[in-house]
Length: 71
Image 1 (spheres, one colour):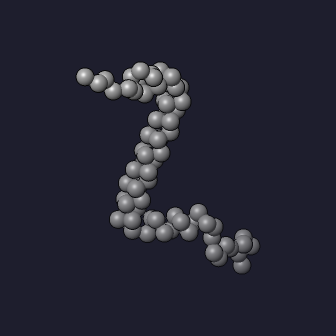
Image 2: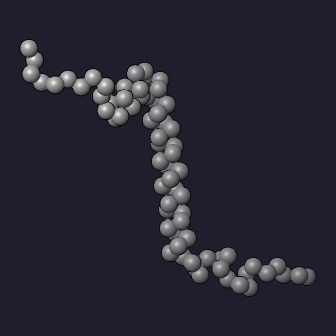
């Protein structure tokens, strides 16, 4: 007899792993979607950080630059 206990259901991560790795097409789609979502998150974060560090130095922050010149 085997004295080591067996896990019947597995953990949450094991279930996700089995779901994603079942077929190559699902895995590739998951990787591409993850890369796209990660790129969007990093782009948003860097943009917000840049805006936070440059408050008052941007063209939009100059009071006279926002007025239109009337001829």
